[in-house]
Image (cartoon, rainbow, N blue to C red; front, side, top):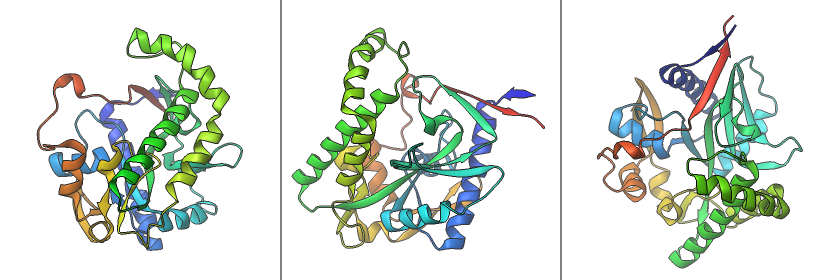
Length: 270
């Protein structure tokens, strides 16, 4: 019988996904880091941000590539990795999903949003010149917008003007091509090697632009953080990172900015 999950049930399911992923990384000796809103939640709330409904992780590109190899032989009744689209083309980031859940996402029609997930962002090298870093993130933002428009549901949006513009912009994005945008984004991200760079950051889905830039030596120093009663890995420069992304990160945002994915999640009770 199909049953809709509450926000708390969604979080509990996602925590189990994260615990499974942690075990895989520990067994393979892979580096992973809580990042984005998940790291913010770990530091400020010792767990999920109360209104949040997803999990963000980052991995050095070399570890990410090893995880791709492992995923091709990984078999589990409840979980799977998504690194490629239906045509076998690499996606700009990966998901580790619970296949027993199904999602109706409000604003996007995307094969990566069918099941409850955690996001895995590859981290790549960045140049030392700040202007060049800014240019990389500006190009990445353009490609992400193309991808987002290609995935957008027509007639959906939080504001009437956004709904209207989708009818104009989505056809243009489709002409440019989702796969072309993803390919260009992936090529842009790997221009500088992670392992030899002085600075690193998430590029393919680094939504905060140049603020994502960190010293590699600080990222490589592992830090343990508490999240929902479990210990997970992050980078030692978490304070610098959170200040760059959120400013006064211990201050709660106003109620109107406490948003989530507005998704409906259900599962079949056995």
